[in-house]
Amino acid sequence: MSTPDTIVHLLRHGEVHNPEGVLYGRRDGFHLSDLGNRMAQKVADTIKDRDIVHLVSSPLERAQETAAPLALARGLTPVLDERVLESTNKFEGMTFGKGRNSLKNPSTWRHLWNPFKPSWGEPYDQVVARMMAAVRDAREAAAGHEAVVVSHQLPIWITRLAAEKRSYLHHPKNRQCTLCSLTSLHFVGDRLTQVAYSEPAGDLIPVGDKGAPFSAGNAPEEKRP
Image (tube, rainbow, N blue to C red; front, side, top):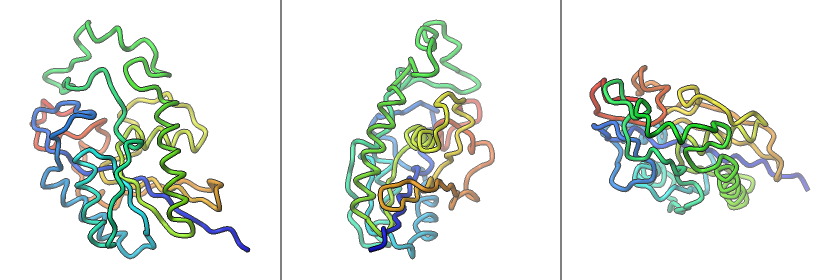
């Protein structure tokens, strides 16, 4: 008997309505912007004819709203999974725009001593452990087919670094995980054989936002990270 091929797509949410440019983290009340909803629809339209049989979403509003068009197109009910939540961060609620960058405040510097762990948030090892556990369950649920897991930039990027056996040390603006991008994990049985990346909604993303560490939709330029 041949071993089935399975793909688990990690889908980052779309643009968030965030006019104050706040690092929202796990906070409630941050929804997709109008453009973010268009991004989510663009992704759904792009992949709706793929063999997707299982859909998972972070419980945060922006993730569920990103999952909604695909759920409708595929006739699936998203499974909410806290293991694919955004990472925790001591800077949650702060701003990092050109006009008001919290990292210029000396009181924040005590959190910056270890970029490998990192010292300002949830340890990368823990993020990878919970994400890979969720990926494993999604792979098993969609064995021989495809699954989509809607998550967030840092968890997806760190999972990719782990999958590719690369160092976790990185600059947030260098993450290849833009809004509504797909990081696709290809498995043969339970063995990861390939990692692919695509940007189905890339044409909708303003050039200046592609490398942003978080989304600040509808924010003026001086408040964008």
